Length: 86
Image (cartoon, rainbow, N blue to C red; front, side, top):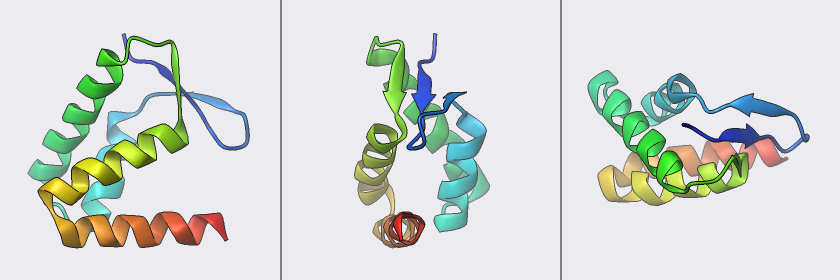
């Protein structure tokens, strides 16, 4: 079972493969790459064997894995995440 996601504002959401796929595709992955990547992140989340993860934990893992797959996409993703923090 996928853990729930604790957002920065304290709200709780279901883990969303679609959201991850959407943001990494926006960062530069192809639709097929984004789908595969998001599924890999869901597998990682399940393997954590916890009931919840923070959005920051997920963000850090996405960035770590994106750097392996596509450095340019990782740079864009990191830039986007930083703009959300302003």
